[in-house]
Amino acid sequence: MKRKRILLYSACLASILHLSSCESFLSIDPPKDRVAAEDAFSDNKTAEATVLGLYVGMNNYNNQFGSALLTLLLSSASDDYYSAFTSYDEYRFNNITPSASYLDRLWSHPYGYINHANKIIEGLEASSLNEDVKKQLSAEARFIRSFSFFYLTNLFNKVPLVTTSDINTANTLGPSTQEEVYQFVVEDLIRAESDISDEYLGTQQGASSERIRPNKKAVSALLSRVYLYKKDWKNAESTATTVINDTRYKIPSDLNTVFLKTSQEAIWQLQTVNTTTAGVNTWEGFTIVPATATARGYYNVYQPTLDSYEANDKRKDNWLKPYTIASGTFYMPYKYKVRTGSPVTEYNTVLRLAEQYLIRAEARLNQGKTVDAITDINVIRERAGLTLLPNTLSPEETALALEKERHLELLGEWGHRWFDLARTNRAVAVLSVTKGNFTQADTKIPIAESILLSNKKLEQND
Image (cartoon, one colour):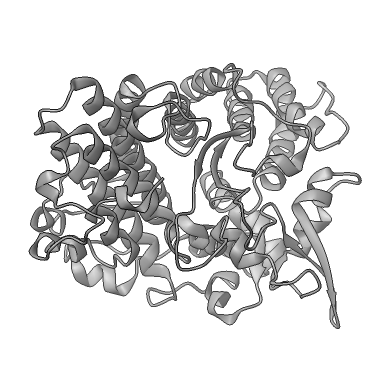
């Protein structure tokens, strides 16, 4: 992906703090490597570049929502891993206030992506481009819009359903319920699923061996997750099955291949595009992996989580890394192993096949298909080198086994553990073991003070 193809739209995303931050972007001359908005949909090439700018904007700088920040904060707030840096203590000790560090970014960055997506959808609708091109690019924008709304509503519950790029309108919208957001997301994803290519595309709509632009199965994978969170078990099962049955995606036996740019398990990945820090593969790797092989780590897996690994679990051996200092031996997350290195070998993996098996297992369990659920869980356990669960487990035992597998399999990935414990009402029971006095109130993440000031109709998360 060449920087010269990226439009001015993407520039607004890196530093967005409010929805209004892109309001006057047309008042300045565009840099030489970008084009003005009125020309963005004049031909296929520039329209495509506008969409590619979405992905660049999600992952071009460190400490953004889409470039490790969400993962770092929610891993600390749950029982995945915590940072030794005090700037994350509010999340580690679940003392998150409306003035907490980084909190505004969990809101403003996704809404920046949504604003970008809305501009694309509106621009394409008004353009005279080929209908097939319009459908493809609009579907990609709808996917990112839905992806962003999914995280916003699960972080803050009631959030404005912004479907226009008009800033004056957007900044006066009141919150929608989670049910309303989910309904919109499902409809948007179903439309995107119908319109988007089943093949992975590169530039100029050509086929690509990389999986950095979402395809039909990426949309389906996100849709299956939304169905799961909605407790629409039947649709969650059938949609996950559609992805699982696609032979392009596999559960590789070698755990060290899962997060490579060539991963057979990856359904959708983000490619880091950055020219200021040489050799960055993923921002998660850059943040967590020490600068030298002998240096200490600064991100530690919570001890109760370490204790939950069974003997011979390959995930502990391959996805965690021990280091020893004066106070003892600690384990840091090590799914991404490259701090900096060229050529690039790792991409940020957002959606992967293992989650689809775990989604289907939960959906089947909640439909009374306990044995089928155990079969899906065992696909993940077998890859981890563990003894397979017997088919004689009760539904209650299977539910606990599934909770554990989701934790250890998806540890440190996109806030899965935090959202899982919150949506299943298991946060207090589980996190009290790790955190001590963890209460139901601690499951609510507040909206940042600066965000509330930007729109009088917003309501603080209870």
